[in-house]
Image (cartoon, rainbow, N blue to C red):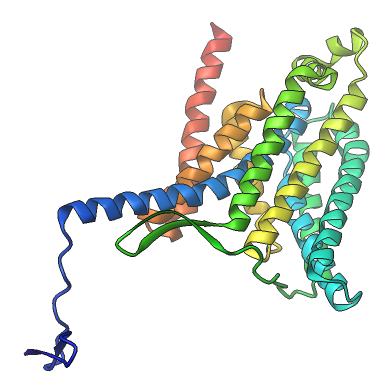
Length: 333
């Protein structure tokens, strides 16, 4: 049984809820399009983080040609370093929040430079000419060390930054549904776009970019032509580490926290995405990683999110097998 209250709103007397109002076909289509547009906007931010990580990963592995499992750990470690430094600056040094964040960003970049310096000189260079498993095992150990160092430094507690620049910016609206991005998401996307575009432009026109391509193709031939292979490699590892640190900083500012174990997850995704591209071009790897982030966002919007990582990994493995088989046939031909 249904009746109307004093305001004319239909209520249920018998405990059975009233039927939901039916949406018109045009409005339903419009809301569906807005929902899709919202998932695309969400994918822009996640894709930007993946793109920056992929760009930096290919800078190192395009020369190393070995699997580096420590790259994702460096991303998470720098994010945790930024959060811990912000907490220390705000609580112990009595700095303002903005000054604490600036101090955290500087600390994350400095740690990335230090770790990249140690990795290039003490790990990658001595093991570059040995079996690929040597670097895989070594970087796995480094991943565990960085993850445990972050956990111990935080005393196994998750520290969270307060929401910053969380004001939503509306891109489209209909029937009360708004497709939005927050200011911090737009800022992250703009920073990644500017960084990748500038690096791609400099990479195509600078002496370092030409030397990197030469060393990537054939390091011995590049050395015979007068290229300082060690200098190019060390600079590539440093730039790749700074890309990981910048991605960790942006992820921490947006999510408020980067967990200790997230480095392995991000590292594996970037490893598979860049493997599909073949480590030939950092900019192409960034574009492929951005597409992967967009696909993840669309999956989360339309399918069960608990199955997202499993199906995305399966897709990447299938792509790697198919593209790898095509490369082998091309080499044989």
